Amino acid sequence: MKIKFSQIIYLSIIIAFSHSVATFEKEIQIKSDTVEFLKEINQISFLNNVEIISNFVSISAKSALYDDLSEVISIKGMPTSIESNNGDTLFSGTAEKILFFNDEKVHLVGNASMKYENISISSNIIIFNPKTGKISSKE
Image 1 (cartoon, rainbow, N blue to C red):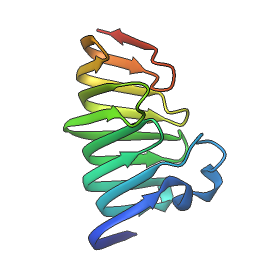
Image 2: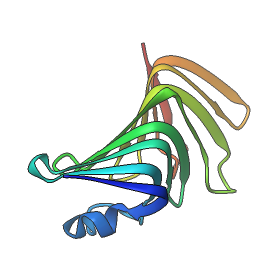
Image 3: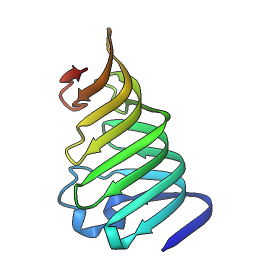
Image 4: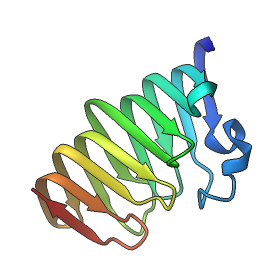
């Protein structure tokens, strides 16, 4: 089933999948030009001008896919970008793909780079917890 909206819409993962309310720690707002509900595979696809906003991060990308089974949002673009949405912890980054988990941990994958306060990191994979500031990378 495909639903297309001519104007930009706002959706919340909580509204889209009411049984996911308990799994995501905070409400996550998603804004995009097009939304596709893929009920048979328990996914929601967000296309074009995607913006994801939580209490800790703001993410911009070309597309995003929420998988209800894994409770992960996969975000893609050329590149995707992420920045702090919390004045206490300042960071920003880019990658080919960002994985946003239900506990708000973030994986930047593919040509990943991140600035966290006075530190700059570049790697194939950067794993980051925006709540605690813990950061690691893998090549």
